[in-house]
Image 1 (cartoon, helix red, strand yellow):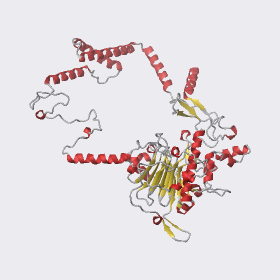
Image 2 (cartoon, helix red, strand yellow):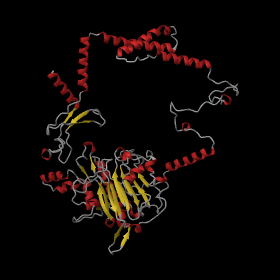
Image 3 (tube, one colour):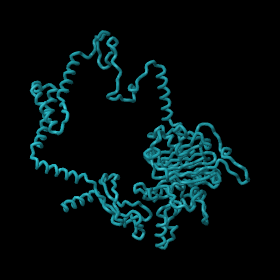
Image 4 (tube, one colour):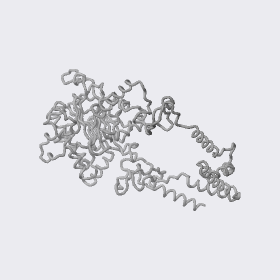
Length: 599
């Protein structure tokens, strides 16, 4: 039994990577993850744009929460296998219980009792002014009751670099803490919190952690205190159970519990600077559990080998059976409920748009069965026939149908066909005239001039006939083609009439110009390492988009040179990337200058 969490950075991103791009359906992608419960963050889509194959994979019950206002932003999803032991019993969007479907969930459908929700749990007057509708409006949480545990799938907000978003982030943390406290203290439930928390629990979880500690100690501040000066880091540390005096945490960092001293156990990397290659990242994706669940957890780890996002999956495996404190064997199958019915009402299975599609298919099938005429695919009202697609043949003259746009008073069954023999003959004459205008290529043609010369001669022989009928479209086309051929012929004759020596010089000059223009740029060498730099392209929107530049080819790592403004010189580690930068256009100008000087 496996529970997996993964920030996928957009549901359209995964199929762009191997091996996901070899999968035919979204159901195949989910199956390849080999998990019973799959939790995604950052879906980056909307309910309206969610493909049915993603919303309703046949092997899973699916649940989604999307932002109410920002499209293509945030969003979380939970997929639960239909044949798994853990089946969803109740489900809700958001943390506060404010988001409700239509009609609203009944008390029996709610995950918790009213007194266990954050608005009732929070007793501090300074926290009672939380805007719960706003906190749940960005599609950041799903709460699902699986019987053995209550799963909370999260995508915690980032601080965004401004005070308003930082306040929003900390308010979200308070609401989350209150939701878990209500489940644990009031309802005595076991809770599993999974997802992207956008915070580091310790110094080991940050590639720059040791540098931050050393910087703080140089300033006379305890390194640990400096690291936890960020509000998110301190909040997560205080939320976890530890041996520190006065700790009031209620959750256990499951992966760190299995790997207490492991370094470089990162789950997120900056792909813009290729940080994954050198494992220069952070651990911000977690699986947190209440202590009562720990006996059931067999293993926990990260999966950095799985590509498809700037994050990697994190998972826990559960035992099929355990031995309790009394020495009795307890099987997982015996402690989980077996509902055997429909999933909770907020499941995507019950969305109106999906039900409507099924209804349309039902009526469409009935219409086909009740009619003896099978309509071709091109007659569908939702499709447009291609230009070269075969069309139904015209009905015979003895059963001609009336024109829908023109009324014919004297139409009879013996009416002749609409197309006359004269119009067919005229069309045939025009086609033959156009064929005559086309120049015939000679076998063994060796030069462009001979091609234009043959065409021009042929056109001259036909010009008297064409000038006699200036109103004829074919004649106008002949005149136009004749003028084009004359111009091309004159240019080619001028080229052929040039002297041999000047022609050779011109060809040599042109060849040199093209060689200089198309010659690959020799990469400059970075100043610190003296190694060839690598060329990149600006993708960020702005005046420099599309321009190319060179930077140091070494990978990034702890202490890599980000420039004097961001990295003190004493913290720079020269084994990693230096701050070398040069525009490709500047490099090309230097190449031309050297060529001119050498010439």
